[in-house]
Length: 155
Image (cartoon, rainbow, N blue to C red; front, side, top):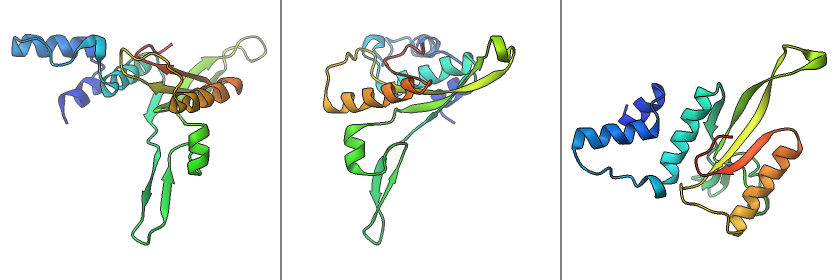
């Protein structure tokens, strides 16, 4: 287990982890909080989700060649290369509890959650990949799910 895995297990925030690094090394942290890599932002989003009672899992998407020369595609919404160009499922997928009101008072349902994680200083530029990721989020949201592209915010 490495320090990041330990921090996730014990719900230690990225900010606290960076502060610990700075204290223990007595140097400026290696990670720039303004331009934090996507991996660190992803860990932070997963920690926030867990604290909120959600469960998020990594959704690796891609394809690999097998020994016999065929391809295996993996990840949500990745049946073909053409589909993957048009719509790209998010980095993190999961479920969050939602209490239903009125006719189903007190009942909890699980709402599908999807977060496409971007580096801290990211902003939407409309690239083909971003458009395909936004198409996924739009589809999920149109069906009652909760999807967004994020550079650190959970909600």
